Length: 534
Image (cartoon, rainbow, N blue to C red; front, side, top):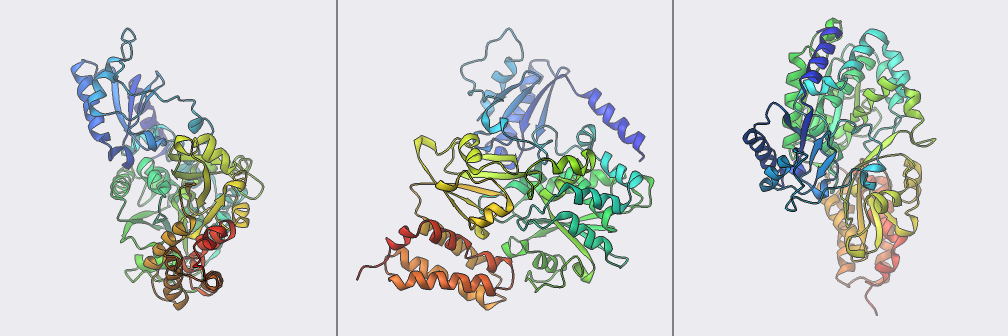
């Protein structure tokens, strides 16, 4: 395929789109609430009304406002229906006739200008909820694979890396390492064989950002990986995704097959000398395999145990070859960076945290779902203005970020801007993007115990500090909750946290104490209340 053929497909797809489109959310959340039945009933209702030549029903990816799904949008009318049931499909079709009033039986229409939508700036999610994730033609119609052609024929690998470096993009998997620097390191390494890996092993409780991107826009991730492979000199890529994401796996497999069919993946892409193929590896759900060296061992067929660094994967990774590892959201940022330029991206966000960040907003919050906001947006803007605060007039007590590796932001610090460094200063971290709202009904010691239970269960057991330290931390927290602890147990708890943090082998153990340390820092009174009186 050449660029002329690609653009012809885009034009034909756009021409064949009907003027009226009914978009149905087909992401995992909506499908779990009869979303597929809603779509089928809409198709049947349109057929019964004789409107098949005028109206198109399209399954799309996540429409972001997950808490009120299944969602159905009607274009170009601009109407958005929430919590749609299969029985309401015929009523929605009836509203396509302007002469018909909207039946009272229909769900309340969500305001398209609702703060949940209005404050978002969609870069990673720009196609989410708009295109059919199972159609490569739909992706091509919105400019898909144009940037892959651009880098192959207009840019050298060094120029691609320079553009990514200029953008200031930092890894969205949690560590925040400069993406351009990582790409540059792999690009400079000698050796005929290099690999590119997409880390889709999203395991934080309450996190579903990467899953939603893969379900909603898989070709965006494939194109980003291909651009990365061209830049660093790789010809083989792997997507490591957990088995709990069957829909994401299905759509990735279909996307790879479609890209191969069109000559956009495999040998001589765009009739060039650039070859790149992608394989999927399904993980068994071990949280530790989100750590890059453990992930590499799992792909190789071994046990997912981490190893000390250096050497780093960029130097010696998969099968001891230079390996580039980024997460889903990082790769999803690459296409717009190449399309609009690194300087454009660098003008979004803050001085040290560029671009946008996708968060999974959950917990005790009215408006749960996916939000993508510019770096520098305050936590309060996300949880109160976009999220609507706690339901039924409750009060926000804290916001937990970063999953088991993160910590709690107390209510008094909600005006903190979302940046890598500011969150670290609070004792938490950006993480992959989980954001859980906690209200006054939550006991913070109980929440710390929940995360420690998770960490001790997920420890690979390779190093003693993590293997036994997390168990001992869990036991002390349990002792506190049972009101069997003494004042010195709190001191032991804090000292043990620092020992585990400073001596564990990998990121899981090093960050496991964070939820305990942050709750001790901001909610120590709740620990003291549980201490056994003499």
